[in-house]
Structure formats: structure tokens, C-alpha cells
Length: 80
Figure: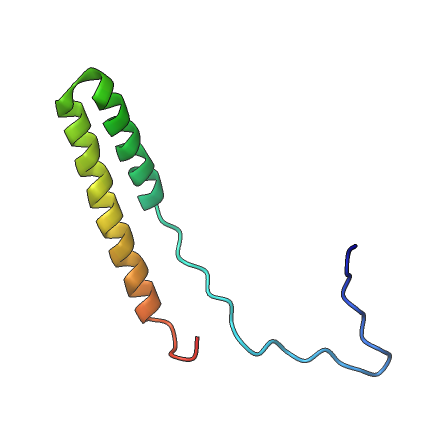
């Protein structure tokens, strides 16, 4: 069962949208997080030093990602 939008009747106008859609800015931080987790998992097999490096990369990326998201949210209007 699919529902398709009903076209306006003749003479009716579609009202303009009432609110803007917010999309976050593009970011490379999810890629760095995934890279850090991958290095940490490979480091479990190879060396604890490599695992530690991966954990540090992932943690730094996660902290920066959260900070960036909080800044974007604080820039939104209160009604959003």
C-alpha cells in the first residue's frame, strides 16, 4: 500500500514551507573514528602499542565530533 501526494485542486496553491531543514556540515571525523577503531582492533592482534595508538585516534576524533555537533546545535534557533 503506497500513498502518493495528492495534487492540489485547480485554483489551490501549495503553501510555502514553514520551517527550514537543518543538515549538519560535512565532516571527516566519522572517517577518523572508524580508522582509529580499525587500528585499535588490528593492534589487539599485533601489538598493544598499535592498539593504544588506535584508541587515542578514536577518542580524539570522538571528542572533536561531539564538540562540533554541540556547536552546530547551539547555532540553531530555539524554535527548532
